[in-house]
Image 1 (tube, rainbow, N blue to C red):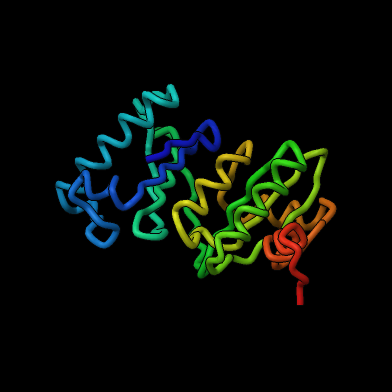
Image 2: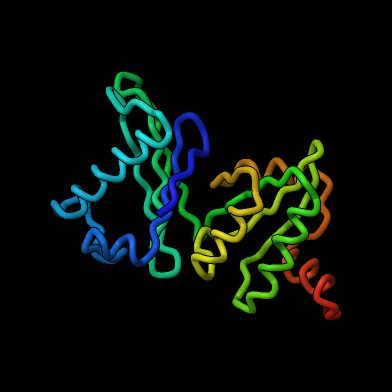
Length: 194
């Protein structure tokens, strides 16, 4: 299990297959109408509050669950209960995850390891903006849990959504687009890119 605070009002919880099994759950059985699921969510909220130092008192919590590998990602977004908010639903077949790297060698080493995993790679873009390097993955459903954890070892932060990638593609210097992991990873492995 990994708990990561993405912003002051947003937390990402990564649960592997073993983590879900510890709660007697799978992604398919996750249902907030069931007491087992509600108990698991309460426990995860308590752990997230402790680890990130957040108070959940008088907060509304939006929980988004996304399957990856045999585990799942839970994105928790907090807002004040008294504040009314507009709700918009955008239906797309995928999300984007953006990872930020402070050092070029961290990014390059990460891409080399990802390429060597020999798994089906998501669409990826690498760009440079204000002395930081960004890796944009066009799917929240990463091939394997170790794929996500490998990136998390090297990246300084990550964000899920569509606004940051759109901003970066408009304002940043694009280094490699569409298949950045393959292009850059193969260069380090000595293979030519077709």
